[in-house]
Length: 300
Ligand code: SF4
Image (cartoon, rainbow, N blue to C red; front, side, top):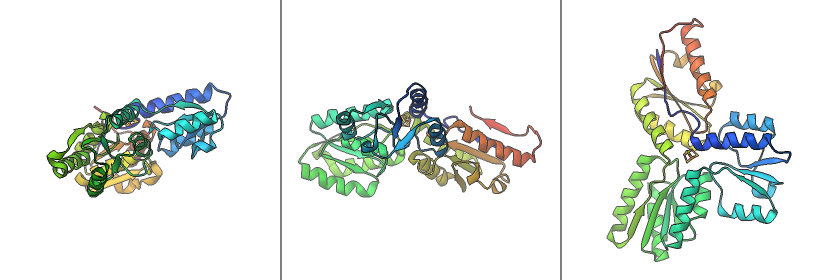
């Protein structure tokens, strides 16, 4: 048996930074510390932080004094409300997301119609679209292009900026951009900024590559994590047996240990311990508890 673990598995830089700084804040303050929404889409990480004293709140109205903004970022109005309530914000929005907010504001000022390609109801997209202004539209899928076009026509604007949620599927984004360009033709000045995070792109590419090589692919991550779900969809295209697991409890190891080549990839909000736990459980089952060395685990 060979187990291939993706080298891009696990926490991305933005999540690593958010978790490390949240822990630091919890340790260094006597104040009540809250987080607006779950800090990361991972139950185990959240439970660990809650044990240390972090409370998750649903909206800024519930904020008491010190409140963390997670890596996904928040809508513009949240900053205004927090300010008017005298809430001390600890802004852990990923710098890459902040950069998109800045781009959106800049192009809104330059009278561009902004199209955000993103996942509906995802906190990052909800935040980003608020920086795009009235003349904007969020495309979730290729079917939304027509509606975006109608809103663009109503706006009478002739300049269009297309941006993406950082964790959007690159291939889908490229397809949507191509379709939009075909539809808009030469009557519009179109600017495209591929704002998909490099970490996401590499993770998706590696998932594709590994899933083509293995007989069974395990995607580790939170069930409510959008980037994890995308990895699952990518793996599904290339591999007949794909499992999505948040923890070892979600896996039937008996049905997995029969494969000779297994791939493991984890989403951006999945701690390395979850990957290690799953890897170890497969090895234990496959070796019958014996310490054998016929397993090659590649992270290179
Ligand atoms: S996926 Fe990229 S943009 Fe999103 S939090 Fe991680 S590093 Fe930041």
